[in-house]
Length: 124
Image (cartoon, rainbow, N blue to C red):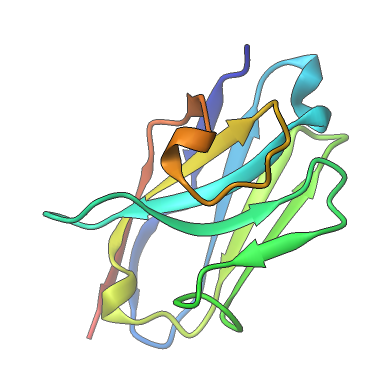
């Protein structure tokens, strides 16, 4: 079992940056693949980025490729999402998710554990 708490969201102008953080409880965190998803109003939750349990491999949705960077610090039980060159289309609630099966998945059903989300709003 792992509990996830996101932070770092807020209001930013287009072109700005934000760094989201996800604090995880539980000693097994370092063995989980971790991902970020987002959900805009009226839309389905979508994949943003994933990082392997070891931190050595990452993957991104096309929408964030080159602008977003996912990272983790297993010693601190933390996962981060650095978001640069933000656009109004990035406005959404951002969720941290954990997968103990290490499937490196991009679908919501791959992840049994979720945080409560943090709001990111990008103004034009």
